[in-house]
Image 1 (cartoon, rainbow, N blue to C red):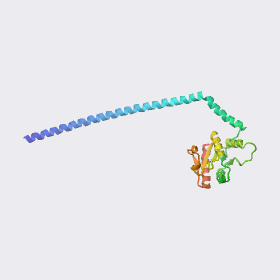
Image 2 (tube, rainbow, N blue to C red):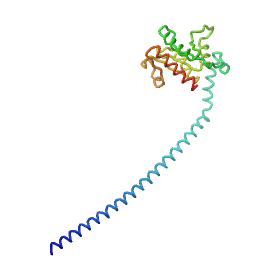
Image 3 (cartoon, one colour):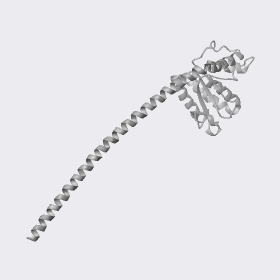
Image 4 (spheres, rainbow, N blue to C red):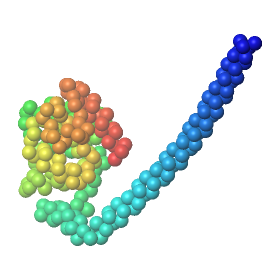
Length: 226
């Protein structure tokens, strides 16, 4: 009789313990779900707040950009005026110079060591039925700079050989960038390229045939986008 009583008591206690654990588990599950809902609500509020801040920041940036133009229009106009003065000093009327759709103007050191490079570039242009020129090919009276600036204005694409670090090449390259010309940069190795140009796309080559092929491919892309 005592053993039966103990057995019933144990069963009752075990059932009560299991019921208690079930209630606790259910309670925790409900709390977890509520916590998850709260987290989602907080996340939505956070996203909404961030989006609002980004929108306000964009609006402010736009206002600042317009305000900068309003306040500094004289400076901006003076910059354009200085560019016009540059052409006037050379006796060039930029708006009159005719663009040539097939002209590729090459900036390269005038040295025998670079003749093969120029020939490879010239051959690539010939393959695409483009006209290839460099500054020393035409005998001109007066300012050679005036002639080069004229050809830069006319050119559809400018090719610059960076090897040799020629001051003339880099000066003329700066002019081409000022004119927003499509420019192809060429170098045998990145070692000779100035730091401020290493972030640009540069055509590297192993030999003259690979240079010719690479220039032709890049010219095709340039003509499509330009």
